[in-house]
Length: 116
Image (cartoon, rainbow, N blue to C red; front, side, top):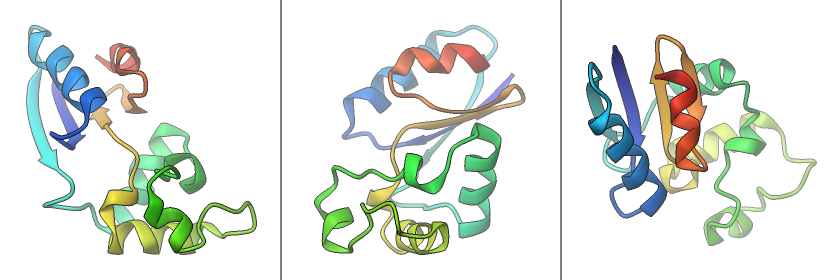
C-alpha cells in the first residue's frame, strides 16, 4: 500500500505518525515535508475534500500567524483560508496522511490506522 505523509519533522505528532507508517508492513511511504514543498491550492483542497475536512478544521489555528492574518473567525471564507495556507504552509495542520483508503488529519496519531 502506498501512503503519503505531509510531514513536519519538528512536530511530535507528525513524527509519531511517521513511525506508525514506517513500522507497518507493506507500506510504501512517501514523505513530503510540506514546509519545504507545500501542496498547491488544488491539491490541498482535494486532500481536505477526501478527508471530509473544511479549511477551518485544517487550519493550524494555534499558530500565531493565523490570528495575525485574521483567519480564526467563523466569518472567514474557505478561499481566504486556502490562500493563506498556500502562501504560509505553517498554517496547515499536520500531519495529513493519504492512502488508497482515504485521507486523515492524524491528530491524534492513531487516526492513521483508519486508512492503513
